[in-house]
Length: 125
Image (cartoon, rainbow, N blue to C red):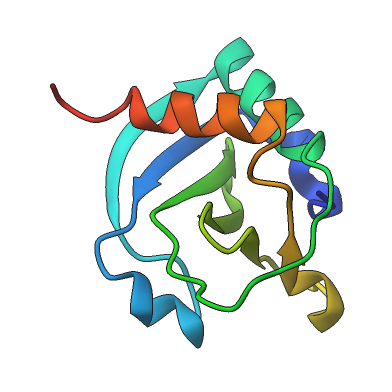
């Protein structure tokens, strides 16, 4: 997946559990509850998984259940919402071209399955 150029400045990731997936069809930003904060190596590992997501044919539902907010010490860099059902992702970030805001990924790939497993591990038992 192609992330904004600022992804290399990420020091902290907020893992977001999306509570109203329909809202993200046309929203200006990512909305949901913070499920976890990943810093340091954990944040870098997550970014590596995301950049390793191979492309896929998109489906049509786009009802994301998970997202991330990437931060550096001075503020938020970008946001991504993931729909593991339709293999779609939506990215919000400053100066991000329209053609890069909507992307698809192979939700059955090893990187996607590992990312989803990490997201799910943030839920209370």
